[in-house]
Image (cartoon, rainbow, N blue to C red):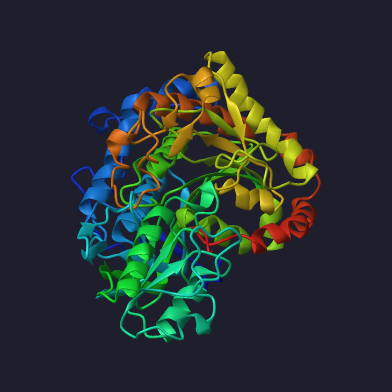
Amino acid sequence: MSHRALRLALVPLTALALAVAVGPAGPSRGAPPSAGGSATACDKRVNDSADTLLPCIRKDELWRYMQDFQAIADANPGPDGHASRNSGEPGYLASAQYVANIMRNAGYNVSIQTYTFDYFAYQGVPQMSEVSPTAHDYQLVTEWNPGRSMGSSIASLQGVGSTLIPSPGGSTSGCAASDFSGFTAGNIALIQRGTCTFSQKVANAQAAGATGVIIFNEGNTPARSGGLSGSLNPIPTIPVAFIPYAAGADLYNQYQQAVHNGTALPTMSLSIHGIHDPNREDYNVIADSKSGDPNHTVVVDAHLDAIYGAGMLDNASGSTTILDIGRLMKKVHPTNRLRFIWFGGEELGELGSKYYVNNLSAAELSQIGYDLDSDVTATPNYTIGVLDPAAVDFFGRTVSTQFPANVYAPSTVARDEAVNYFNSIGKNHMFFSPIGTDAQQFNLAGVPASGLLTGQDCCKTQEEVDLFGGSTGNYEGNIGTTDGGCVDNPFRWCDNLANNDPDVLTFMSKAFATMVLRMAFDTTTMYGSQAAATRAATARASVKSVREAEPERGSTK
């Protein structure tokens, strides 16, 4: 992951200028989502036990929060013209204001942590087509993906370097300037994926005068045959497209045939436009309880940003879970300080949580004894995932990171609290690691953590079907297929309200509430472990290599 220049500012909510549009049920309301806005028994009493808190977590109130997040997204379209709550955009800013207002009105001490990041968004819808000899419009997601680039070109296609069909040992196509020795400036370069980075290939193409680049997969393994989407840094000023091996082999054969016959080269059209701001502001919303020991703080977090568009499953659902719990616990006097945080930039590489943790002083870090993470809690074709530092990753289903024992053992306390709740309502569970969630940043800093998730994208396994029902394939989106779902597809714009199950959201929120209650009143786990500053130093040293090896979103080669 490339280094970004980040800066910190903690400002009062009232000083934050938020010139954003909101829907009719938007964030200016700041009132609890109860019928008619009237005070209820739940709002009046101290919900400091499962017997009092869990009955107050109701489907209709959770769903009203979700409706509000959808209204915010609808009122704030992104540069592509679709509803958006992406980091760095007005919809995310409005979401931050919405959460901050509710928590402030509930009596929490609210602050906004500001940082900057490298922002890019597509403007309009990218286009790719073959003009001749065979006219064909390529379909986004299924046939091609745009790279983070900007520009337009209609030009002849020219193959570059040692292209191999297929590539048995890794193609070097486009990796050296000499590959472009016979390249005609103005053409679009056809390059095969291979042994060097995508950015290196594109930089060589630009230096040779290419007006566009099409990179196709290698075809040497199943994993390197289908569609791909690669990371590019810096952002090229010519359009870059990524296509599957089969499509690339077809274009390469057309190019070779034209050269052999002395006929016109294939003509391609690429159009990719975007907005790039290397210092776009983003926000973490932090809400501290006014009581509880600040030297023993429990962080309760969810990421507030969407990945593409409205982001209702990922992660308005998790944000709703902790927002409802926070408001219902407003009269509670916990033993330990509760710090609710809605992080930004999680979908871009856990930017908000990484910045928050990395900018804590040793003394501040030593005060944090636990983290609970709520990341996707309303999946229709759900799994029930409980975070466990020793478990397999959700994506990949292998153990990719080993955390120190002093992180693992206390992490099981909240984990087992969730398991007990699921057992009590007759539901199974699976363990997943925190990799890919904000909880990972706390584990890396030596802080025990657990949390919940319900799955996204593809593909739900038969083992999960046996445990939770439903069907194999997509967890969400077009259920019953394996097309990848809504969440991680930038040009489907379907992670909307309908992509969530309110019943799943309700029982998952109740399970998460039991975890919050357990740690809010814990006097053994956080108090009995070694000093957090020492714990953090040990953990940071042991996992330093993990962070240094973290890749950009999407593969770089």
